[in-house]
Length: 418
Image (cartoon, rainbow, N blue to C red; front, side):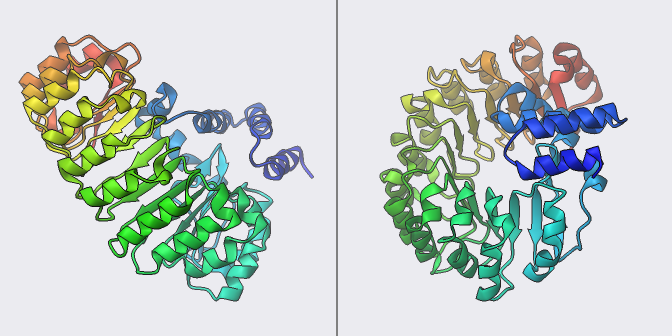
């Protein structure tokens, strides 16, 4: 076995440890691969950080290759697509991590070799397999390494095999990409009642309108240990928000994402009335958080711990911008998402004078009709000390104004493509 192979084997043997990976990075640098060594070290550091920390924001907007690993995809073990293929976000902590599996039979053939050369810890699974296939998968070596599992469609049979399997108890997050179907509440109830459900820290539901009330009841009946919860495009209304936020499922959350639900101002108010004290990240993109909802957000003392707030695709008015900017509770914000919020000159006037402005690390202003007079407010404002990314849509800013913003903000200003 070569030194390279021995170091890689050490990483695969201890996939949760950073020390073998950093030793591997040292080897790469000493053997003529400094760029790849820097990539491994950067991704190890990224995995330790919250997404609003300066280095994480820098990588996301100015060093995207360190996030995606695109230049290093040729170093991944070869797979047989499309039955088994590396996900577009294949890398984590510098090595192959995320695999799409459409055929369990193909994975059974490839798995042992892949696991000897890549510390796979995340999979997207498709349900075109028999229950016996899933039981075999649940008993395989990869399951003890998995930390995140995505179910691309029907999760009933794979979860039946996984939920009682001791090997699966290293999982931290489960994603349901099609959370529709009348049987989803029972799936969640059985999952949370099993050994696997008691160790999970994140549940993420996307696109599902059926039996929503029963799903929320299932969450509140058995998910007190959750730290991360996503209910995206699920049809949540103000009534559903009241039931969800009134139960134990949310009490320990640090991250809550309710994007693209018709909550309206009343529903946003229901969320804020019972916001968990430890919450650090709140996603309210596309929820109809206008008028009263934004004023309630500004007046909510429970938001004092927030570091990340996404209000994208909620239309602002000058009044709501002024109210939010004056909030004494949002001064801890580090990342604020205002993508597509109809922000113009008057709204931006208030934001750059906001109490949260000095502490921002990231401000996303893409897809807003900000006129030159509004951009002039950015030129007149003091530059926040830790600002890393002030993000604007490239096509909405003329060349002269771009040059002026560059002179003011340097590399902190990012002109993003549409």
